[in-house]
Length: 171
Ligand SMILES: [Zn+2]
Ligand SMILES: [Zn+2]
Image (cartoon, rainbow, N blue to C red; front, side, top):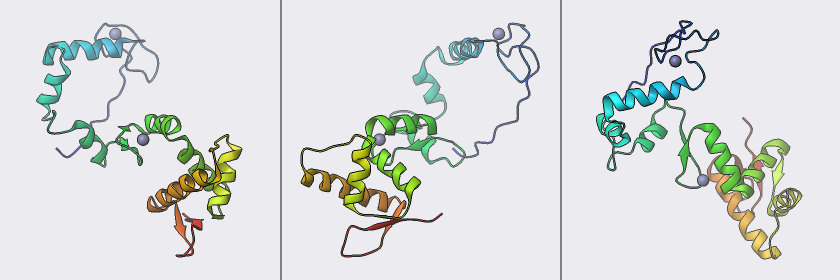
């Protein structure tokens, strides 16, 4: 399915659920009436079943709506770089803070501070944000992994093929 183009809708001053209420400037709905309208449409067209809704649009267990949302360039959905989670940008940011905190923190630190990064600097930066490991070896192993991942994601580049030393990629 391609062509995600939507008509530009203009608020009319009345609630779009059809209840007849006046609504504020720039608003489509009285408070909560968007959900009521959505439920009414779902009941009317799809027996209130999300499976019916998906099927009607060609999606289901074998044609992933999540995959379609992530790959459509007109759709804001993204996939997490570290796992299978997908969602709107705000939801991805929340997810990453919760599920991949050390990566998230290190990527932020590198972006903010710039310059050259080796495992020692990465461990120190994470330590300042309360990330600690049982021993130095575990810490090294983990930050090397994160630095490699951030490198393959294009945030940093390796400056010396022999060493785990990276520079922030200038945008
Ligand atoms: Zn209404
Ligand atoms: Zn994830």
